[in-house]
Image (cartoon, rainbow, N blue to C red; front, top):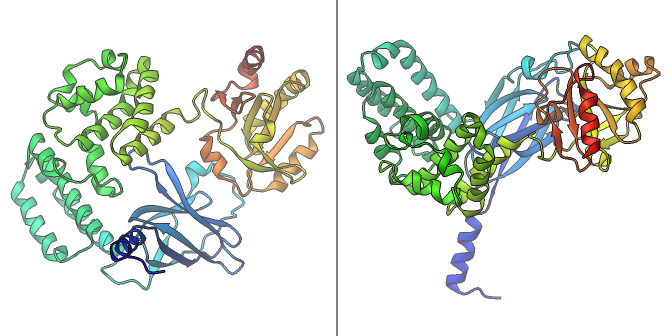
Length: 464
């Protein structure tokens, strides 16, 4: 079948806008049979992780995976809790060499505190590759800032900044990579703000008015986040004069807040103005605690009503960020193995409330609390699921311990190859108790421990 000329052009154009394969190959000695995960922030305000892909490291330490990318992304490469960052471009191939590491060190640690950075080398690339250029630029930038901070910040030495700008132009002026050019431009913008090279209005006009919003550019968003920090309540020449509570509690808080933002005549770019509002709402959520529900209402409206797709996505991310583990939100799903090494999911406990406990065999406080679970289990086992999740690295260690405790007959799970559950539940100390209702929603986080009032919470959830 022959495709008419104009339709053929549209067909080719639509194909060019599709995701392009980015291939990542590599070696990770010591990580044999572990999973390597690639993710990117869903947005650069909340930095909520968005999975891109994963691959099993084979028995020889090799791994390979391909990603569908439509744009350059700032990505995280992780094995267990150990990670590094890399910029990934569409249709590129990356060959990585991850330095050897003992991932199965017998030392039991809190992975949030003791995780290490992966030492990664990208092999076979040219000096003009994006990661190489950003690395070179950052090294020069950091050296300049360290040596001249006082001259820039205290003395406002603008000539020094002009000289540095010329030096950077000589080194990087011929670079055509659009991501890098914007990255360098907004990193210099931070120096202009530091030296007060331009005033607030001039900086907004130069970097945000009639300029595209570079949602995925790390330095654009870093400058945005710093420049507009507390903008609504402190630094705006207009907005800070108004108490936001009356706007938040109005009949149409989204529409009213958008009109309120427009009273700041410096914010001529509507897309940027709404993004500043979204960031400001996240700040208000943490400072105006009596208006949290109203903030969430506006964010809900923004993710449905905003004219800008990217702002809708940011609003949704902020909403999820603020409501994560909040009462009424869905408890993060998980899959872990029980003492019989059978995979168990959170969904399998639907129908009855769940007392979820994260613990380790090396935590003395956990063990004393565990002994206090037993009488609660005996009393409420017909109406409540009791689930204790061992964060020990090795299933055998958990099994050996609970086999010695013949009266520990409730459900025990081991994190094992699913360390993400610790991130999902933000487990930073042990023991951590979470109360989940019969529909799988967070009822209380963190819940009280058995020694300090857990039973009262159990009785309360059963009465509702």
